[in-house]
Image (cartoon, rainbow over all chains, first blue to last red; front, side):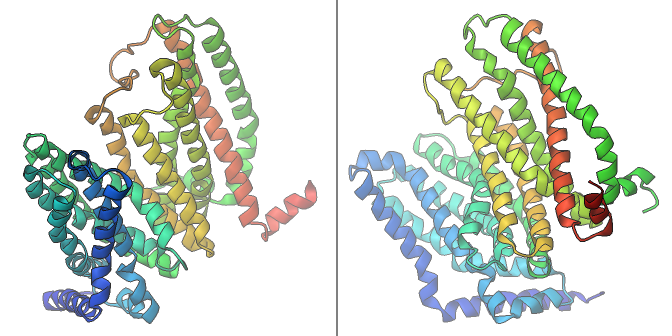
Length: 230
Length: 248
């Protein structure tokens, strides 16, 4: 169906606004991944060692692993409530391309989950004695990395949305796809801590983000059609 | 779709696939049996000892072909999934479903033999090296496809969803190959390259080549057998399968 540019952009903006509004009306849920992030960070000194030297060595990788797990937990919420109240079906039959609507949902979802995690991460860096040089790469890599994770997670969330209790399954199918992001994200922080430039690894993270922006909205749209209608 | 040759359409129907592959099976079984027996006896009994590793290197005659097939099997699965999604071909989905557990098993064999080889060579069963890790990730990718396939109660949705996941997973496969260059640490560098001469001695390499070809034939055999079983199960209500059962 041929649509005017306004009709396309309008639907994109409408979904974006609607998802943000829904998220702000459930502020408690917004904070949950952050609390998870914070609590797991507390487990590390308790479980490994409270010594600053040990923690500093673990910090780049640990913070990244925890951010990955937190974003994995929030990925499940991307489509579930829309699926339950039937509005996901409306998106599927909308005249606009489904991938645009999915992209709007993912961006809104990242703004309320990935971005707060990113902004929260320096606090965890302090708690885990991350050396000072690591903070800027940590924030930059998480900003790009969590958006990439949200993009990838949207495919998994779309594939499992129609499966009852699909949360654990979502983790299983998405985690292998998360690993390259984790490798480059954590190593960018590690490189900065070791006194090297993190620019190259951050550039690769940016490339992963660009690539996932190109591919995952289509994959997630296809997955939604498959998951809901077979 | 007039551009497609006749055989593509004919093979696309489960019934004719069943009949055609029935004629291939004995040939394929004999070929893979001969190749595997020759390769095993040659590799384990007659190939020269390695100067550094002694006899322990001989596990490559299982390890290397299994690793090759583990990767190639993922492509087979993903391509079958893509064909099933694009041309809505029933048979392709059946091939895909059959390819997933076979590939997962081969990946496990590759990991297991690699661990056994690691003990005498490096003194430890497990090293977090790039290639081992990417093989493990490949194993997880297979498990994800299998898990997704079993989670759906609707067969059609299970096929398509796992096909989408397999296609998304193929994005990871180039990274698996690249990881050899990126994070090469303890592991051997890739010794067999399609371009350029192999850096192995020919006396060691020839039996390996026999084993690799043998593994490919064996893979094809197992995949066809599994697909045939899947065809019979899914088409169990059709008249040709019933006629087949009555005849047997």
